[in-house]
Image 1 (cartoon, one colour):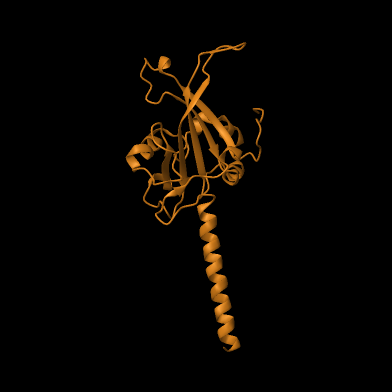
Image 2 (cartoon, one colour):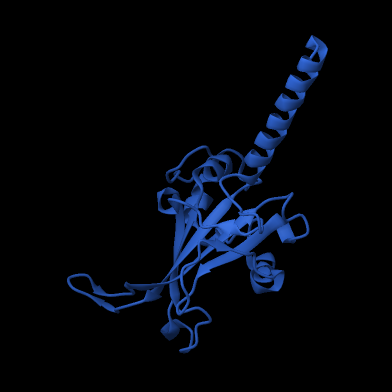
Length: 198
């Protein structure tokens, strides 16, 4: 093989590696199997917890659409990007843990809403290449609901199941930032803590 052929072969390999690295970067921490299913994000509890909401029946005339406590996590790289730019980067992943509303009385702390059992695990991914036709380039996934086993990989839900509500009601790029004080405080500030109002 001539030097020119070796050089061309080497450059082709480098270009392919660069393209593949770019694809990996665009996808962020999300990993997909060969069926296009999202793999359950690893160590998401070590990510940035951005907010928790409680929707009990007694505040919804006994009929809350979702009777649960929701805690939302964002992958650290995307949180860092949010702090810098105030935008969700291509590749952002969020994970939502759902817990039942348990006891209403806590020893020593009084009446309140205390966490019960785990009742769900969901995720969303922003990927402009993979989800070019989805609103905001976001796709939504469910890994666990009561009565079914926790799955290691999930297919994205039909747009109408999740994306439509997010599109109509979420404040920023399909994300309910109006309910996440951590994101509101950090938006484009470069800071992770609460910044005193000016």
